Every structure is written in C-alpha cells, then in structure tokens.
Image 1 (tube, rainbow, N blue to C red):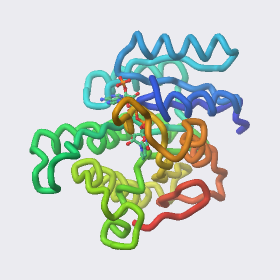
Image 2 (cartoon, rainbow, N blue to C red):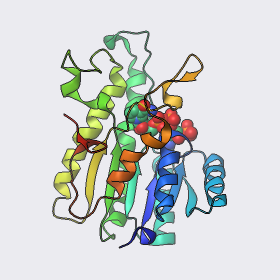
Image 3 (cartoon, rainbow, N blue to C red):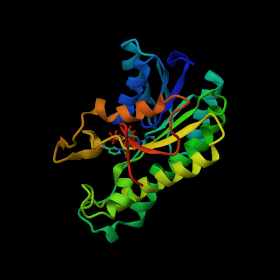
Length: 248
Ligand code: NAP
C-alpha cells in the first residue's frame, strides 16, 4: 500500500503537535482526517490545509464524549470503510505547578485521566474494527518522557525534578496501555507504539506569555509521523523519541 492509499486520523489536531502531524502526514500523500473537539475550529484548520493542496478533511471528535467518538467512527466507516493510521494525540496538562505532588486535587486527576488515558482507550476501542480492516494498521499514542517511571525514579535524569503528577502518571498509564494492547495485536497486521514528541514549543508549555520548549512544532510532530508510517518490519509495543528507545 502506498502512502497515497492510506487513511489517517489524528485526534486533538486543531493546534500544536496534532495540527502539524496532520500537515506532515498529508504532505506524504496520506488522506488525513483532522479531528477536533470543536467542529468549527476543526473545519477551519482543515480548510487552511486544503487550500495548500493537502488531502485533509475535518471531523468533530471529543475524546471524553462517548457519543462524539461513536459518531466519528461511524462517519469514518461510512466515508472510507477502514482506517490505516490512528494517532491518539489529544492531551491536557492541568496540574497546578505551585502545589506539591500530593496536593493536586482529585478533580485534576480525574479530568486529566478522562482525556489522556480513558480518551485514548475509548477512541482506540471505537476505531479498532476499522483498523483491523487495514492491511497494515498503525496506532501511535502520543505520550511523554514524563510518563517514564524509570526516568522519574532516577535522580540523575533530566526530568527528575519535573513532577506534575496527574499528567505524568496519565502518560505512564498510556505507556502501560500500549504494551497491553500490543499483546492483543501481536498476531494481527496492526502495530501500536507510544512516543515522546520532545519538549515542544506549543500552548501546553505556555508560561508567562511565551511558549517554552526545545523543539519547534515541525520537529515535535516528526516522531508521531515516523511511527505512523513504519513498515511491516517495524516495532510494536515500544516507546520512542525519534529513533531512540526510551525507558519505561
Ligand atoms: P496543545 O497545543 O495544548 O494542544 C492540545 C490539543 O489537544 C488541542 O488541539 C486540544 O483541542 C486537544 N484536546 C484537548 N482535550 C481534548 C478533547 N477532550 N478532545 C479532543 N481534543 C482535545 O498541546 P501539544 O503540545 O500539541 O500536545 C499534543 C500531545 O503531545 C499531548 O498528548 C501532549 O501531552 C503531548 N506532549 C507534548 C509535549 C510538549 O512539549 N508540547 C511533550 C510531551 C508530550 P482544543 O484546541 O479544542 O483545545
């Protein structure tokens, strides 16, 4: 199957890394569905990419809303009959940086898990039947190095002092879910991996009026795109940043 024949869907794609992932996938010729929780913003973003000649369409998809997920899956089935690539990119960081690890509210934990963990599981469950209809299904879960339990336990690691616990643990759960799902899919044509995009200059890292980060957004989308386009000899059940394997 060439990239021109593939159909991809990226969640949380109205801005940041998700929007750029849509752009880069579409630039390779993949027909890419830009999914956003706000229909108007998703349509606006898709129209801008279409105006650049890219094969992009919009869909409304709130990863915390079961009806929205079911409706999106039905629309993709009706329009395309299958899905080749699912990028679970939507994510939120709600922790109050001024509070200690033990001081985040339970609402913060629940809301974070609703989007970052249960959203990933629910969207994957809804689209798995369509991914099984692909000759080479690919799932990319956008996690974070902050989800690495090994790095958090290592005082010499660069992330050791960055304790935003609800977010960090939600990404650890995404990593653990990826390994569980890879087991289910090991004898299928679907590969599932979890990735760290890098520390990227997006709204998520907006502090004091500036977007902090080490990578510009185009580089921040590259690992998602790379794992979305792996061949049949590619990995499954791994945790990657570019070509680097990250510790769990
Ligand atoms: P961002 O600029 O804040 O964008 C987040 C995206 O997620 C937005 O499009 C947002 O939609 C969407 N979203 C939030 N809740 C949603 C929901 N319930 N349903 C559907 N979409 C929803 O963040 P980003 O930096 O691009 O982050 C993208 C992914 O990379 C996240 O999973 C994040 O955890 C991960 N990540 C980022 C970094 C980094 O340094 N930036 C590092 C590691 C991992 P709206 O526009 O509607 O709000």
